[in-house]
Length: 35
Image 1: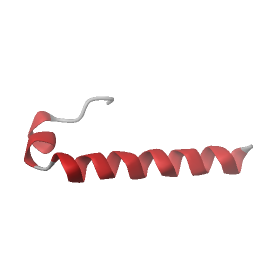
Image 2: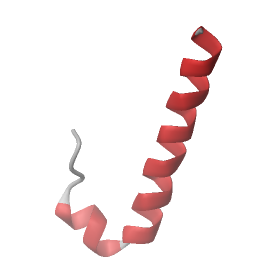
Image 3: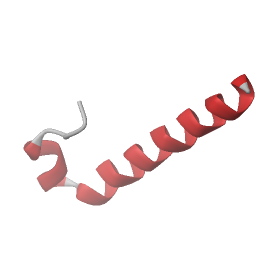
Image 4: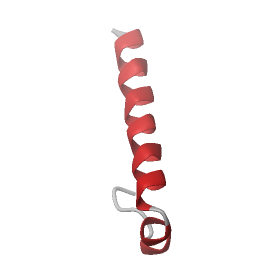
């Protein structure tokens, strides 16, 4: 699950990257809320 499908990354890498960054921010926020 770490690697995205080549089709999605090659079509729109910027959108895919922003989506990954947003997912990371959500995960970090959830981690902060748990502690």
